[in-house]
Image (cartoon, rainbow, N blue to C red; front, side, top):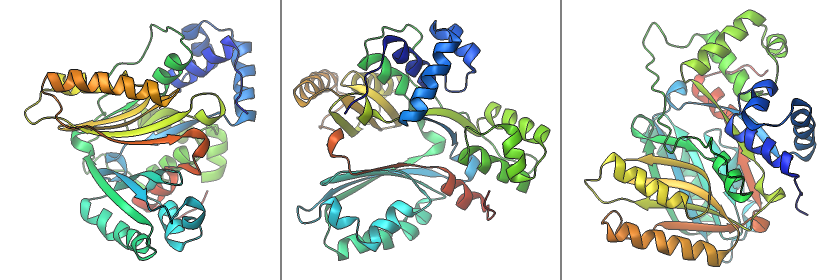
Length: 354
């Protein structure tokens, strides 16, 4: 059963997605809702497990060179109930560098962080070999996005605004470039930095005092590192919403290739076009391609909007083939994961549990 949000609760949800790092006071002034309503709404959302506020590490900060998206189509003889009993499934979803994974009976989409392409293949090939050995896979496609040339856009606020027709005028910028992090010998993370960064990612909602108790690092040091990590782009705040509980029918993932010789404005135009197809959740852009996700209220509307945008892009010579598109009914999603902390621990060599 889907949750029914009041108009003010929808505004609070938008505010949390748009301004995930703001205090209740700052949030109230930005969305026009009083603090008591924000407090009550946040408590409801917490009870419903509707939204999580994550501290997301930059790839460069943890020594990751590439992000990889993996699209898999499964054979009819390998529905989710069969796959999840296999060791390969546990190895895949439990692999620390798999930071996100969504599965239905027929498809899955995963996101991995890796030190290099070689590192990805060395660790992932044995896992996928197990899937092939079990005769699960009908088709599999990988796309690699080097962090140094890729832009990331967290679009949950756009999705809330679109789905609830809020008509907000404070929507985030269209393309959010990553903050470059250059780790020189002088600025390289110390062991204390690594432990603190891991703590922030694993426990994004804990106070500095509680993190101090768990790590053994003084509260002033914790507070100082929090400020440093966010200001330098080592961490950024992002909202993750359980859309199955409030709206929509379909979750789609796409990958589209853009013609060679395009400009940055061409890339932005393709991004804007795909953003118009549904309620956008995120996008990753690099020269020549875009990977992202959006929500839709139904298939006819999705197809109509997608066809119209592709016709316009094709007429302007920006794309010459249909995008790869995986459509999952929200009601048929069997497993969903988003977790950065095991990846941070592995990449930074944090062996201590907190």
